[in-house]
Image 1 (spheres, rainbow over the protein chains, first blue to last red):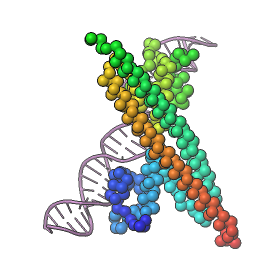
Image 2 (tube, rainbow over the protein chains, first blue to last red):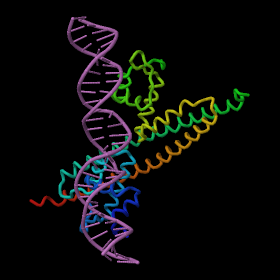
Image 3 (cartoon, rainbow over the protein chains, first blue to last red):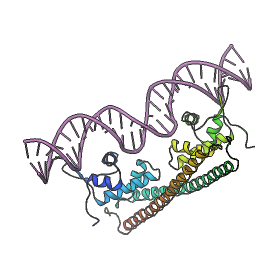
Image 4 (cartoon, each protein chain N blue to C red):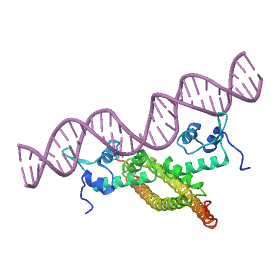
Length: 137
Length: 137
DNA sequence: ACTTACGTTGACGTTAACGTAAACCAAGGG
DNA sequence: CCCTTGGTTTACGTTAACGTCAACGTAAGT
């Protein structure tokens, strides 16, 4: 059932964050859960938003960036200038993401190959030590 | 000539950072340039370290992490227990990097395909508006 | 001698993204 | 009735990674 609702602690344990974090995201305008009295009630859509936020964080986006992205998901269907602006924003964002993807892929591969080399140097140093026994001998 | 040396502003403009940033990295123990009087003189090796730090940043590593990684590049060639520990650190780090690579690739692809969908929804909404002329008509 | 460019060391300020603590309410169990 | 288990708001604290002065030294050019 994708239409159930969630308590704040439930979401917190699900995503391994604290309730403070979730309330903080609301404070920053990234979430707007319903209320039952004082208590926050999170919908499936809220859950998805949280997921978006956390994914954004893993990619190094700021909360502002994630907020921006979240707002791309519910366009104003009656306002064509707004829609056009939104489309451009989406395309720009995609461009940024793709460029980032390229850069990170290269960075990660570079780093891995350098770690390989560093390991190799260590292994060789160890081999050398094996051949000439210690100075104290 | 890879063995020339660099001034602090030279490195700063090269990498598009401020001199404050470079001194900050030194303060945190990631760099240790020579001195000529008071003035810092950076070697080619220092330049490489800076590059490592900045790449680390792009990957979301902390300065502490980068410091750790930099220290992997000049092993103590006479101490085999140290060398063994270092090799294990390198392997662990590579494991982390690879896992991060996997995760980021998935995150980026997910995000791109979701942006594609969002764009599509916008375009459809625009089409709808074109068909039924504005309410004021 | 004066300015300009580049360098230095403090030291305090700033921003993002929460952590932490205090003080409180509400529902249910024993 | 009290306690435990959630939930709430408000507010101050914290950390990383610098930014931003201030106050000064030095060497080169005019």
